[in-house]
Image (cartoon, rainbow, N blue to C red):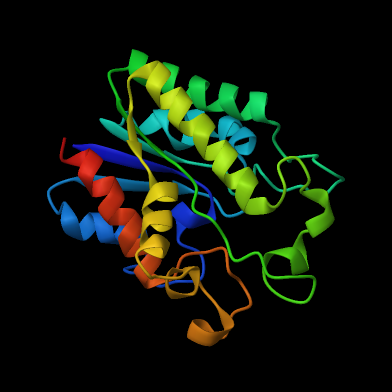
Length: 214
């Protein structure tokens, strides 16, 4: 069984050790499977589409975990000007899934977890202007909306959903906090608030694990 994990810096495992990232966790959970990490830091789904053939299809995967969206929702160029607009995001996800299904590959789409929004001095809005996220209001509302697109595309294709967005929300509803599962000044010395720490990656891996065992 060959599994390709296709995505951005969260898939790549930026800022954590190799064994701490969700990819490494999955390798430990499924030692008999071959895993390929096709994550590239900073990538949007459109950039992923440009490298789809050489980074995913060339491996002839039996399963593909598709995890884009954190960078697609960036609005750095103006109010509500996402790096990848909703319709293009939807089209990219559909393209990945349609091509892979034609080749007999099982699909697992991941939704996108929320981030620590912060303010102009710290965390997400220190890097991406808060005023640019108006419709809907705030980056986490954008991440929720793009996660809904992930669920919609997966439903259209009859694919599995590893609902990372929902799992993180449930964790918070049960008394947890994003500061426990994302990299922060307190737990790592990093003013980040976007990338998962080891605990966050374990949660993502466990969410994907459920779909892999079906």
